[in-house]
Length: 164
Image 1 (tube, rainbow, N blue to C red):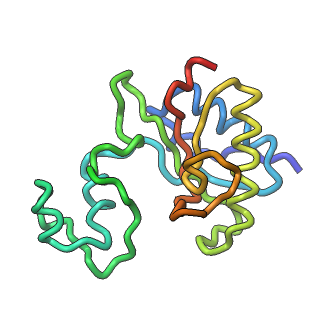
Image 2 (image 1 turned 120 degrees about the horizontal axis):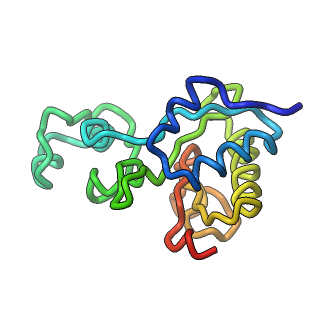
């Protein structure tokens, strides 16, 4: 079965670098499971909200982030040292360099569908000649979720992607 991106997924790709958009568009035609784009470009506000999850007010204030974003009871969703260093934010070239994809059956704990989407994304990147990194295999060694690599929905342009 061939899948297609829905209207909501397409709208969430607005502002994402065209090279990464091409990879996502190719991957949906290669994947063995359907997926949707849940986030492309992220505002500063959303970056602060995400960074506040799993952190105390003191931790936020210590790095200059308003304490109102603290959500210590929530599960931590980012391990970045700086909430504004996310590749989801608009970068120097005017585009976001990351997307988060959620595979059907839309269960955050079901890892095999995330692996299937990653397989399609990595294959699409080869076809499109775009270097990407997967958040569940940051070091690119083909061993997902080792060494704390847990961001299964996340894909971003790899450093030097334009040189491929």
